[in-house]
Image 1 (cartoon, rainbow, N blue to C red):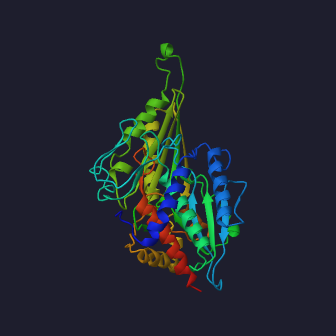
Image 2 (spheres, rainbow, N blue to C red):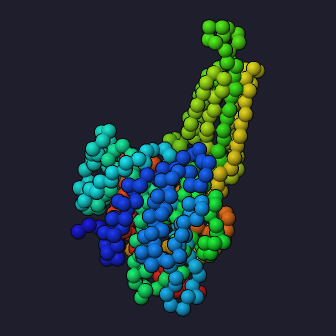
Image 3 (cartoon, rainbow, N blue to C red):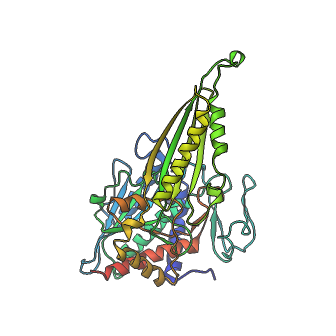
Length: 420
Ligand SMILES: [Zn+2]
């Protein structure tokens, strides 16, 4: 028998999988060149679908606002004294990998071997993907090898939809008033930007946007972005002697001078990093886009200072070149804001344990909508979804773990229903 965490999870699994497979087929990739919210029309397509489905479930006030945010209410059962609790997931997928033409494949009763995908020779090897090892017996959903899956965060969307549908159909199961929120553009750091916390009206919320079974995250990176622009002197290469200043070569020198041990691929756990994620250049102008991350505000400032100093030293050696560095802070470590409301994390721990899972308290090496929502006044830790290897063609999800997440939401409702 497939390893479900509870009979409730097993009961929720078929509907959950059906929803998940439907949602991942909608191309909701967001774009960093955002001129409106949401940044891409595909997100609206899924959001409209979700509004229709929420109404069918019985959340009659479901609506999509002008910025692409879906909100809906499931009223409390019982005396209604419990606080209003939010459930949040994001509809967009990462700009880092294609989300066009996602064709999910369900590998029933995974046998523990290497999974070969039909396109691009993509494989999921449990010897490489540690999370996949030990998932024998699970139903594993993968891509076809040439797109991401979009379990980040359609696993979260499907889990919230399934849990809410279950609760709406089972008024005998205790629940507080639940507010559902689906956000656009989380992957480009704008999920919380136009989120109307007042209208949402919850005292706290949970994002379903984590990964492995049992994860409960109340700590994220603190994050900044730096855009470094180098300007050179453009000339015809045939008449360049002593005149040309090649901005792209200078950008290359800056990249080479950055420490190799302060990168995402060379750090882990609580270490921060500098990550150059995009470079473009001509002779006249080169642009380096980088992010800096850490759990500690002071260390984040040190990473930014290092980036700045490195660029300044390289460019200073060529007096005819010019340098611009534009640093912006993106989101804070949410722990500062969440630890003021211990009940938020306590309730989640109780719900996860109620599902027979030991909570895993790991800091997120990234951010979530919850980072900024918590700062804005809505304490929002993050819960697991059962999706793995996000932002890649090797992205996969376990049906059993997704079902455990949906069941955990149902239990979370029960925990809050008891709290005055
Ligand atoms: Zn996500």
